[in-house]
Amino acid sequence: MKHWKLSGSLICIATVLVGASSQAGALRCGDRLASTGSSMYEVQATCGDPDDAQHSVETRIVRQRVLVPCPGERRLCETFVEQAVLIDVDRWTYDFGSNRFLEHALFEQGALVNVTSGGYGHKDPS
Image 1 (spheres, rainbow, N blue to C red):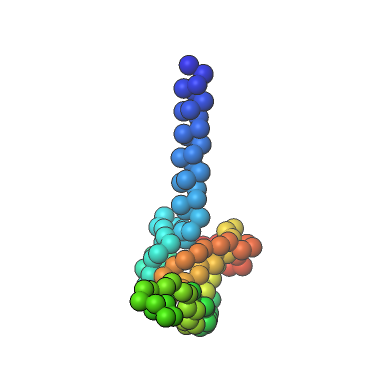
Image 2: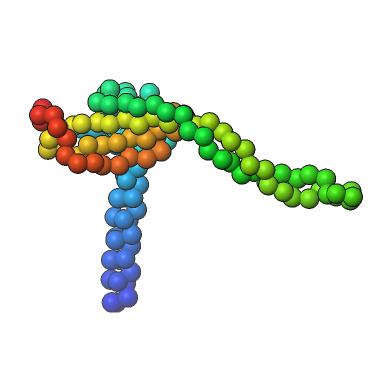
């Protein structure tokens, strides 16, 4: 009997933790939610215009596995090739008022990849 109670408790705790982690990459705007993977358009439609928006282009090194002819043989050998790629990065900041934390939304190639909270906002609550 105790085993079942312990198992039930663990399942409840796991459910709460999974729910909390799934919203860690989400931006709550009133009663609406913009989730990881949302486009910039979707986030703007959900949350409105950001209070600050910064755009940059970053160079990243991507390592790819390729097959090439083995020297002196008739079979293919595996090797890795590194290639520089350009990534569009946008950082949006939302200030929902002095009673809430600032929310920082990070987009890569136009898709929301991360949301972090900052200090308290500066606007008057409305």
